[in-house]
Image 1 (cartoon, helix red, strand yellow):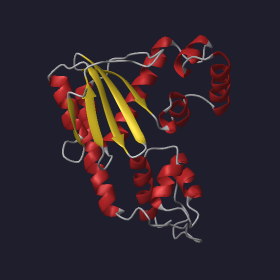
Image 2 (cartoon, one colour; image 1 turned 90 degrees about the vertical axis):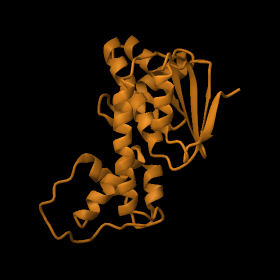
Image 3 (cartoon, helix red, strand yellow; image 1 turned 30 degrees about the vertical axis):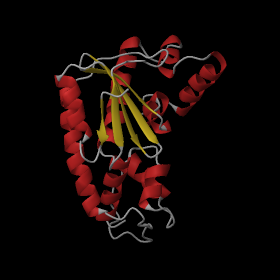
Image 4 (cartoon, helix red, strand yellow; image 1 turned 180 degrees about the vertical axis):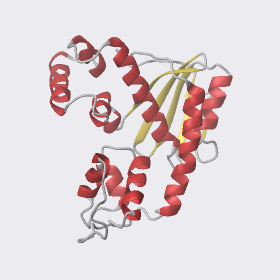
Amino acid sequence: MPVLQGDASAFRLPEVLTFLSTTRKSGTLTFVRGAKEVRLFFQDGALVYAASNQEHFRLGAILLRKKKITREQRDRIDAVMQRDGGQFGQVSVQSGLMTGAELRDSLKVQVSEIVYDAFVWDGGTFSFVQETSLPAHAVTIAIDLANLIMEGARRIEEWEQCLTLLPDRSMIFRVVATPRDEKITLTAEEWKILFMINGQRTIQELCDDSEDDPFHVYRLLYGLRANKL
């Protein structure tokens, strides 16, 4: 039975995390919005693990996005997992792709990205149970929850600004045929989004189809629009 549950539109995720931290709770917080689900695992108020059912928050996808591994390396680890089982991180260490310390650092990035994404969900429900049933082979880590919450609060504010600038998720962009400035320099992430803009995808579909989180997609879209592309 949940000992804490509620509507995420009434109690924002940073507030819930702060409560669990200050009361030194142990257990599992589940946050659900539509088909998305995030589980955060606590031990004595410390966040030690996070899991998401979204494909782009798999460790392999994050390492690829951060350019820590190549697509070939990811596919090779995935093939080993399909054949022998295990978790991406553990197989990566066993194969020499990363060290144990690098795995812990990567897991911190994974947990942070999962939490940051959940921070900017509009709505949803949460429930907390006082039992911590970690997934098999889970590697627990120590996360600085105070800094995570501060960064999350900043992202909520920036996300609300993004929604003010681009309020209609059904809006469709197209790339201009002749940019005004011939010397615009784009990052790899901006090029990736630019190539996805085809005059048919809505903002929501761009977020769904991108390997990046919606917060970052919105920032990139606004930058491209501000550069009149």
